[in-house]
Amino acid sequence: MAIIQVKNLSYKYHNSDTLAVDDVSFDIQAGDWVAIVGHNGSGKSTLAKLLIGLMPAQEGVITIDGQELSEQTVWQIREKVGMVFQNPDNQFVGATVADDVAFGMENRQVDRETMQERVTYALKQVDMLDYQQREPANLSGGQKQRVALAGVIAIAPKILILDEATSMLDPRGRREILQTIKRLKDELNLTVLSITHDIDEAASADRILVIDDGHFIEEDDPNSIFSHGSALIEMGLDVPFSEKLKLALSTRGLDVPATYQDEGSLVDWLRTLRSTK
Amino acid sequence: MATDITFNEVDYWYQAGSPYAVQALRDINLNIKPGSFTAVIGQTGSGKSTLIQHLNALLKPSSGTVTIGDRTIDATTKNKHLKPLRKKVGIVFQFPENQLFEETVLKDIAFGPQNFGVPTDEAMTLAKKMALLVGLDESLLKRSPFDLSGGQMRRVAIAGVLALEPEVLVLDEPTAGLDPRGRLEIMQLVTQLQSEQDLTIVLITHQMDDVANYADHVIVMAHGEMVKQGTPRAIFSDADWLESYQLGLPSATRFANQLIKAGFTFDPMPLTEDELADQLLPQLSKEGHDHG
Ligand SMILES: Nc1ncnc2c1ncn2[C@@H]1O[C@H](COP(=O)(O)OP(=O)(O)OP(=O)(O)O)[C@@H](O)[C@H]1O
Ligand SMILES: Nc1ncnc2c1ncn2[C@@H]1O[C@H](COP(=O)(O)OP(=O)(O)OP(=O)(O)O)[C@@H](O)[C@H]1O
Ligand SMILES: [Mg+2]
Ligand SMILES: [Mg+2]
Image (cartoon, rainbow over all chains, first blue to last red; front, side):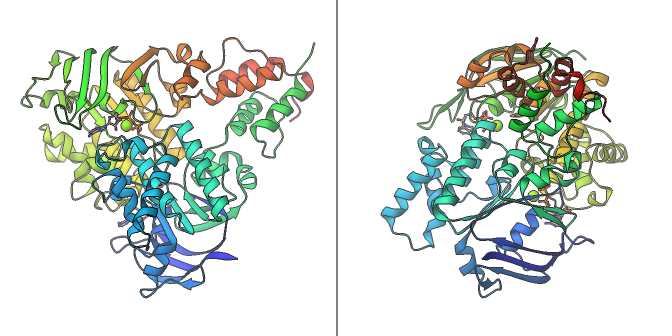
C-alpha cells in the first residue's frame, strides 16, 4: 500500500521566478526506505517541507497514510511523520540534550515514565547518553546530528524523513547510525525517506528517487540507478568506488563489463582475470 | 607570504572555571608549514573544530601559545588588533548558515573585503568573481542568503572567505552538503589556490579519499589530543591503528586490501584509484585487454 502519494505537486517560492518543485508525482510504499537524490538546489528539501505541510503547495495533492494533507489534517499528519532538518541548529528547542529529545513526545500523549525510557533508549542508539545534561548548542557538529536523530528515534513515527541527517558524521558513525535506523525500520515497519548525496546511504535504500531542477526524473532500485556510471554525478550522487575503478581500468585499455558491479563482484571478476604466470 | 603556524602546549577548556567545564584540547604541539595542505581528521567530538578556531584567535588557548606568522596568541591576548590576523586567516565554518548575515548573497560575499577597506565597487566585482568560482548561479546573487538551498548557502560561505584573499584558508568540512560535482570543484579550486597562489590550506574532513588525493600532511585528533601526524602514506599504512581510532582507509587502499586476499600484490599500497589501476593492470592476463 502506498503510504505517501504525491500527485502533480508544484511549489514556487514568492521571490523566485522558477518552480522549486515542478509537477512531481510519485508513490512510496509502506515499509520502504527511499533515498531522494538530486544536485544542489534541485528541490529535495522543498519537497520534504511540503510533505510535512510546513508550507502549502500551490498545486497538487499529498496523501499521507490515507489522509489528504490540508490545513485541517496537517497536525494529525505531523504526528505520523518525524523529520530531521538539514541544519540541526534549526531544530533544537530544549535546554538540555535530554529535554530536546523528549520534546517531540510531549504532544504525542506519552506518559512521563515511558518518555524517560524512550529518551534513554534513543540517546543510547546514537551513542550520546553521556551528553544528556549538556546544552545542544555546545556540541560538536557530528554530536548535534546524533542528537537530532535521537529526537526522531524516540518518537519512532510511522514515516521518517531525514534531510542529509548524517552529512557530518564520520564514515563509521554514519554506517552505525544507518544500521540502527534500518533495524528500527524493520522492527516497526517504518517508512524512511532519506535525502542524501552519500553513496553508502543511497545504497542502503530499497529505492532511489532522482529529482533534477524540481522535476521527477526516475525511481528505481539502487543497482539499476548505480549502473548509470558517471552520469550519476549529474544526478547529485557520487559514483560507487567499484565503478570509478572500472573507469580507471577502461581508460588504461581494459575491457570492462558495462553492468553495475558492487565491490564483491568486482573482486570476483578481477580474480578470474589474474594472470598466474 | 610565509605564515608559519605553531601550537605550543595548547590546552583549551570550554566554559573554563564553571562546573560545566569541558576540556576540548590537551597539550597540542604542532607546526603547519607555509604553503602546505594539511588535513585534520578524527572522530566526532575529537576537537577538530576547536583546534582550527585557534588559527585566527576566535578561540584563545586556556594555556599554551599559538603563533601565526609574527603574532603570538595566548590566554591573555585582547580582542583588539586582531584584524590583520582575521584577514590573514580565513575560516569556512562547519555550519555555513552561522556565517551568513547580509541582505543579499552578493553583499554577503563582499562584506569581508569591504570590512578590510576594499572600496565598494571593487569588493562587488571581487564578490561576483568568487560567486562564479564556487558555482553560484548569477540569478541567486540578489537573493537573501537565507533563501537558498543548503548546498547553495555552503557555496556563499566559501565565496565570502575566498573574497578575503587570505594567506591561510581553513575549511571545516566544506563539502558536507555539496553535491559530488560541487565537492570536486571546490577541492580542485582549493588545490589550485594552494599551488598557484601559495596559500596554506587546513582542511577538516571525514573523506579519506580527499585526504589521499589532496593533502600532503595529516593531523589525527582523538579525545582532544593529537595522536599522530605525518604524510597520508604514513598515516594510511597502519589500518589497525586507524581502526582503533574508528577511522577508515581511502577507498582505493581498502579495496586493494580485498584484492590482496584474492592473490594480488601491491607495493606501495595504493592511495588513489589511479595508483590502484596502475598497479593492477600488469597483474591481469592479456585476455581482458584491448577488446574494445
Ligand atoms: N526560502 C527560499 N526562498 C526562495 N528560494 C528558495 C528558498 N529555499 C530554497 N529556495 C530555492 O529553491 C530551490 C530548491 O531548493 P531546495 O532547498 O529544495 O534544494 P535541495 O535539493 O534541498 O538542495 P541542497 O542539496 O543544496 O540542499 C533552489 O534553487 C533554492 O535556491
Ligand atoms: N561551545 C561548547 N561548549 C562546551 N563544549 C563544547 C563546545 N563546543 C564543542 N564542545 C565539546 O568539545 C569537544 C570537541 O568538539 P569539536 O567541535 O572540536 O569536535 P569536532 O572534532 O569538530 O567534531 P565533529 O566532527 O563532530 O564536528 C566535544 O566533546 C564537544 O562536545
Ligand atoms: Mg536541501
Ligand atoms: Mg567539528
